[in-house]
Image (cartoon, rainbow, N blue to C red; front, side):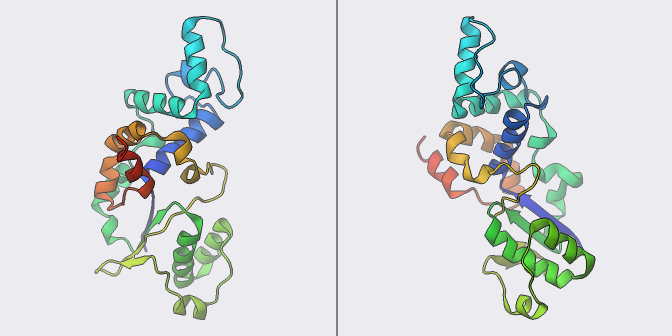
Length: 218
């Protein structure tokens, strides 16, 4: 039984940025002069009074400018946290349509409905572990059999596509799906789409409505 769960590429990119460049300021974000030495959330003063440092400080205080700076610098050093999903697992874009279950995650509620159906059918230890990890409500087999989420799509080969969205809680939860308007600009949306269009194309993912609306402003 093969399962794959994909995430909206734009939300995933922002989530990685928030986790690696803002929350933890890890070495995953380059250049470090912008993304490590000063925490843009803390409002710390510049390291010195130089014109360059004052400019960097201004960028750090503006979420959209700071994010856009990373979007522009990121291609100089690809990081696996931002790498296209379609290239993982020896190029999963070649195999995913043959999987038994494929989920698309951004919002919690819709994805959970589909996930309940999946774990109920699987049963056993898998169901127990997934219910615990995702805090799924207890559902009887009879209820799952009579409740088919409206967002489920089935391939002709029998595999299940859950066209839902999820923002799962956990150690790395960033709430990126609810923060896109605070960080993205039309320009950064277009640039990230240039990097990750391979995911939308090869994984049959839809560009979110909010991104379409931003692009219409250009």
